[in-house]
Length: 501
Image (cartoon, rainbow, N blue to C red; front, side):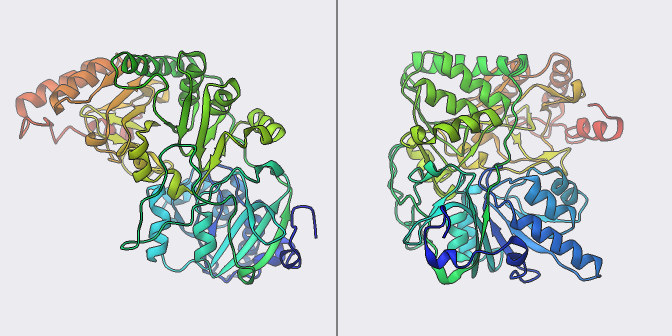
């Protein structure tokens, strides 16, 4: 037995990754761990990609269905995509090689709300799950699995897969043990019961994942780091967006619509989100909580400063410097951070009950408040919807943020009509750009358009948006949501043809 594998039955199954992948049948559906570059298997995917490449060199077809928690890393998504080893990918990806394969039609991709994945798998919507490949940080004496730096869909993969390969990663902090809350009380209708969470710090499960030893066909030992996300310091645009959000939250407190400690925070990843969190760290709010998908740099800093009492998520998404701090002091964070399965971290029932304040990034918004989070020019997938829909529809306040322009000013983030709809106007309360903040609550579509154009659009595009809206008021088929159907997507077509809107 090794230090991280404290059970003899599991220790007897230790093999090299190359031997483990030979046990996976061609064409299998594989559920792999991993969420935003945390807790993904480090050795098995590369060995599997090598096996695929060798098979293809002999003229033998070999592809696999690849299911994860969310995005992973180049060593997983990129390696398998590069050798044409993925048949169907779900539910979220951010790898450039994978994206190119999807957009060129060489890989199928199913984009799905992250809270829905486990339910769909239990329903059998994607077929049988043949193999689970799950990273853990250790195995206890009695055979329980100590989860890694992400939980994602691992509980479901271990339950539903016919066979399991475990990667035991000794790079992960041993102090992760006890930080997780794995809930085994979910069920399909009509056996479904309420999820007993009334606060972000509530523990309702066990710190361990369960897996019958007879399912485990191989154990691979690793000592490899997660893919750390490098965040650049907030630029002026990010800081201006963050300033508008913080002013809005302060105004909501003054109006009595939010308590001084706010409500549980949900934040998408990225520089704008971290700029908002940095503003909260310097701001007047104390006793904050978070019920979100990922713990990122800004939340770690809020915990360290004492501003954030507790944070519930399903994974980490940290910069190299932040992950070094976390690994060094993981024991100190254990009572402040909970990592849950994503079907719980993103569950609409819990989000609605807690009244989360949701903040997510977008590709574009239209003048009526519809949001495109996933597609470029209507047809090219960027990453996926992720968990933004889980939170947006059920949040107490749903906030979407974006710079007002992209590609050096060639693209406006505010357009007459979005080229793809991920969040309808009904799920969008607030839109923020560096230009300003539009509170859309209680407004009719025409009032929304007036506010978004005046407040959020970049000055270079504002006159054209106003002209479109004015002419739509005169010529639209109806005046509830005025549109000129022959022009509504002309901005996107112009960009495709000329490189600028």
